[in-house]
Length: 204
Image (cartoon, rainbow, N blue to C red; front, top):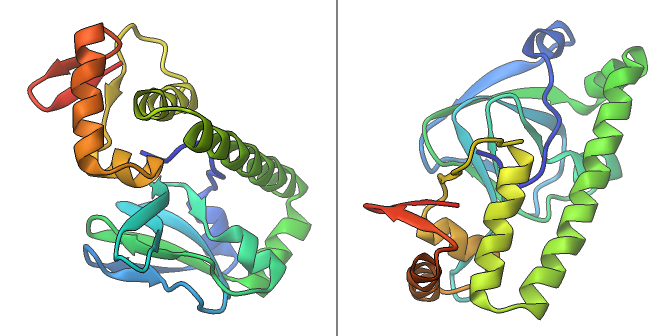
C-alpha cells in the first residue's frame, strides 16, 4: 500500500523496452541512500519499498511506501541532484531501474506518460502541504484519522469499512508521533466509534 497519494503506475513492458533492468533486494536492503546521486528512474516490480529519513536520534520518518507498479525517486532525478531521503525494501522485492537518459527518451516518445508524471508530481506537492498542516495544527487523533482518510481516498475505497494495513509503528513514523501515543489514540478513537478494532487490525 502506498502512502498516501496516487503515484505513477507504468507498464513494465514499456520500461523494459527502453532498457530497464530488474534488481532484486532482500528485506531491509537499501535501494536508495540519502545523499547519493540520482541516476535512475525506479518502479516497484514486486514487494514494498519504504522511503524515509532518519533523525539524529535514530527515529525514522516515513516519506512514502510504494508497492507494485508504483514509481519513486523522480524529483531529484529530474532536478539532477542528490536524494533527500533513503529507500529500502520492507520485504523481499524487485525494482525496475531505468537510466535517466533512457527515461528522458521514453517521455519524449510517449507524451501521455509525461503528462501523467507531471500530474503525479503535482499531487505529491499538494499532499505534502496538506500533511504539513495536519501535523502542525492538529492533535494526535486527528492526525491518525487524516492519514487513514487519505489512504481511503487514495485507494478509491467504496465499501463501508476500510481495513487499515499500516502498523502502529508506521502510523507513528508517518505522523511524527510516538508509537505509544498512536496506540493510546487508537484506543480512544475506538471508544468514540471513529475506528473499529478486531484483534490488532483496525478499520475506518
